[in-house]
Image 1: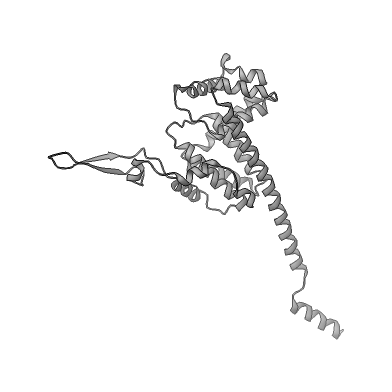
Image 2 (image 1 turned 90 degrees about the vertical axis):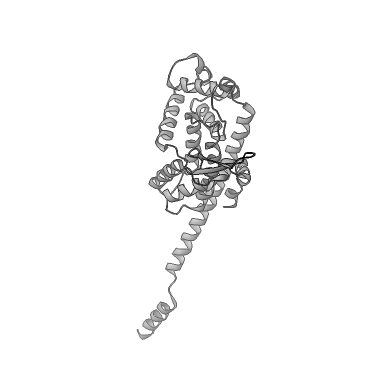
Length: 282
């Protein structure tokens, strides 16, 4: 379990230092009103009412929304990482430059499915996914649908086709062109670790094994390749630690199961005495 708690999410360190903006500090409830008093020389203070409907929720709000939506207990091996991911994604979600895109969704879905692989209940796993995404004020069905759409498209590609998206027409090609334009500064774009994982998943499904393919794809999308390499290393490290932790959990469950069985097989003192007396009488 210790391996999971030491996951190297730099975003979590940033979360500890995160402070609400000036507007957020003024009021803690979305949709409230800030009374802003501004004094003027030789006149009374002027009180202005400023609507705050665009104030983002805090990290605590997002976590509370998740816990309210999914009330069943989650094993600690999963809960610890889910909470860390939720904090990290909250910080991404409420950046001023954030704009949802399907590659980001594919990356998150990939990470989530890897994390929750082997979860005791498929139904609970789906319910947790829904509660998690909804807590971020986003649409879980859109995440799944867009991820599936990209996966199906990537399976029909190869390395060359993947990097030549800008010269072709199609739904996914248009999505990638839009990302490229926004990343170049023509709109809102906020690079994230989930986006890097989404790119990796596209390469994986298209069987693009040449290292240069990622270089070319990042260049075509106007994404910093060094950032992608760094975040993919973190992702691989996460998966490695997760595998180790799940092995520890499996061993623990088997040990506890064996102990319970031994307790059931061992007769209680009163039962042992009764059995002895019965044999003596016989």
